[in-house]
Image 1 (cartoon, rainbow, N blue to C red):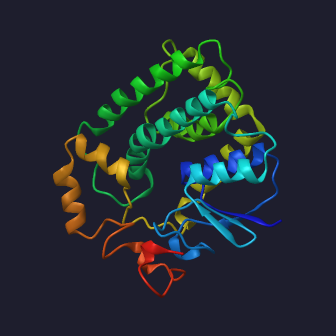
Image 2: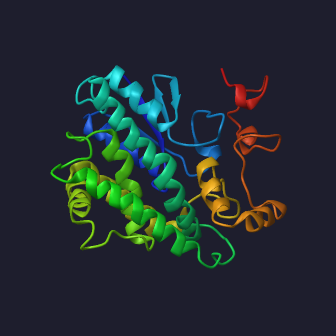
Length: 270
């Protein structure tokens, strides 16, 4: 067995997968994933994480976690019970489609070469994130982890909440007591300690990283949140200035990946 994870500590989805793999007790290698040209396998969307299992390639973090549960059924990330499974997936989707768009959009101003953040955007993020934290607080009342035993839901939410805390979107000390307790428990776990060390190391060496700071791939849900908060004109200006990376379309940066298939369209990888 040979497992390799294409990984960058800048990506909450890479962090999620690495923590889940460590929870399962798997041995694996890390391959650099800051820049599309570094990854040893092709993803048609030019995104990480990418898992390589003896040459077999899996993309997209929920698909990777689902694959790992079937390949290595010890310490399941998703419960066998149908309703419990649905609950874990629901909270995983909250992390991916609701929380990540807010946290990552604000985080882009920490690593990328962007003009000043539009006025009111951070305040909008703080208001929206607080509502998510309220829901998490209610869910964690009387629970150590989001869905009972630690699961994919916890590994998906933790990088987002931990990043929000350092990006001006922390939990309220009086309003989110149970959620803050969960955050501390996740951070104290062995997987959380590894994740914390990797994130700190990445940011301590920010200017040595190969990540593209000139152009940003905002992504579907992130772009949706940005535009919904009145930044359509701002984003259009970034497009005109060629400051945007694309995963799909005639100028997709996935087509510029040297690992892309030479026949057919890059988005139709075999």
